[in-house]
Length: 279
Image 1 (tube, rainbow, N blue to C red):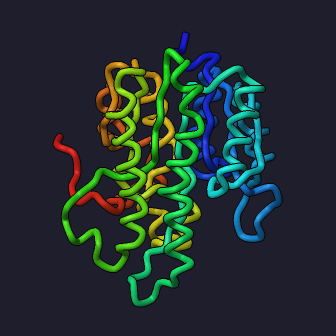
Image 2: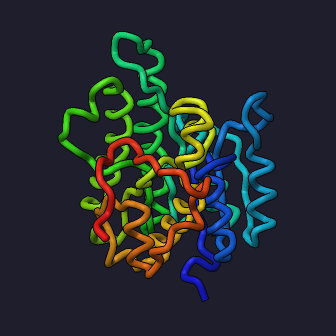
């Protein structure tokens, strides 16, 4: 029996892409999944809403609670936490998935675009996690997982997109700080980042179009590694910055060909990583 059966996950975002893949994987393990997102109505250029996501989660075997809300709004987040606890009796897992990306350099980046990234990525991670803390402290399997990168002092990650780097590193710093703050609870708090590009709308629209998509892995590699972390004993895995393929290797999964979006294409490293794992 999976350690996630009957557990409740609260996720920011999740209408599509990586978040939806993680939510559906959790559903196959028998988890309850609450997702809080703004996508009440279809986007003209992007597939999926919070309601279609809920249908897919239920079809995968879980129980879904779609909550229309904005992670930037403290009241909206508090309501999402209250509804989740009311529906499922508590919260065991928090996944900070919602994120905004803009890779423009300072000279080209409007202040409102900086504010958006900081509000969703950094502040949203703080607000959602903080709101869920009372419930997490009552769980005997409490995890917080933020989809953010390992922190590097290499200045090349500041070149051209310093604002985005700060926003994503901020997610990681908040999460790793929580690991230290709540070690006695215990609440496991970790980050997870993909080795390669992941085939999502953001990659297609912002990082190289169809060519980038061909050099990416599918969202399922992120989902499988995320669930592997969330299954683990929170007393034994906290304060880590995980990479997806390393997590899977620890689980005995080293053949990753199933996750490659296009056979025969050379994979492209994601931002914030500059090397491949040792054989």
